[in-house]
Image 1: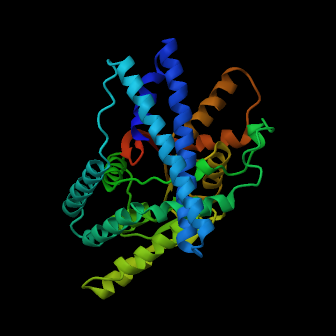
Image 2: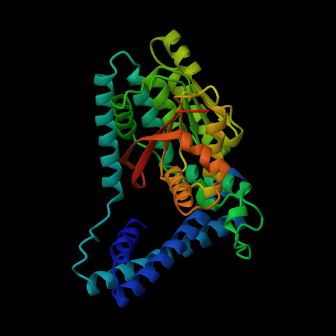
Image 3: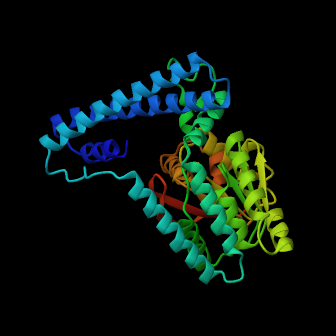
Length: 370
């Protein structure tokens, strides 16, 4: 998958006809691999979680064979692209073990920085939590359960392409539930930049789409304040709660750990139903969210949160909304009242930082009016 993605990115900007044809093939293969990978993970989880009869075993084996055949075709495509376009030096060997080792090294470096930067915070607790979450996300069953949970939330006609009106589409898609994680090093860098802008990160936090709790754990340990996480997928919520109960509760100083556990609040609930008025800073972990969902969340925060609330966003969704409103004003068009009210958010900074799926531009805002 990673090598196909690298190949697709390298070919995307080219105007060469042959390269564009190769890009179409690569994108098609990526879609097939993602679909078959999800099917295999789902069937594997269903098999492990339920009765292991011959039909289920056969279904898992068939899904695995289909994925292997598609990966074989992908290897052939990559070889042809490398042979045809040798100047595209982006197709080196992809070593999963080496990449995972690099992630663990970066985690260790960030934890060391955190211990130095926040000497009065229980960072050793965070060290155990990060190790547990890394272990969890490396499990096939972890990802299979996510896919099963997500399927249960998808509308029956999710693949129906007859409705072309995106403005009225308020259903979830499978992509909305794509799993990813944000490393501690990125969180520490964001906190540093927030402080340099004259704002304190030592406030109550809310994480919309909190996954298995990464940023709830970061926020509560580093800030020493309550951090709430809202996650709609039961398996991710349960993972966060389990890690909190088993890792935060352990340790030499029982009273301190009980107090820390109280700071970590997890809710298995749609983030649009969350009580965000209590939060002084909110993260929208919505890199893969549909536009309607992002817009609804911006509107909710604007209506319910107080002046000075910080908003951390993984994309430029709010910027795009405000840019559209600005253009409407310039063109003399009728203003959208809801979008106009979002102008009460002021952009503090945009900062490109690494996450598990690459690099994203974090947009950090402050709410300046009601």
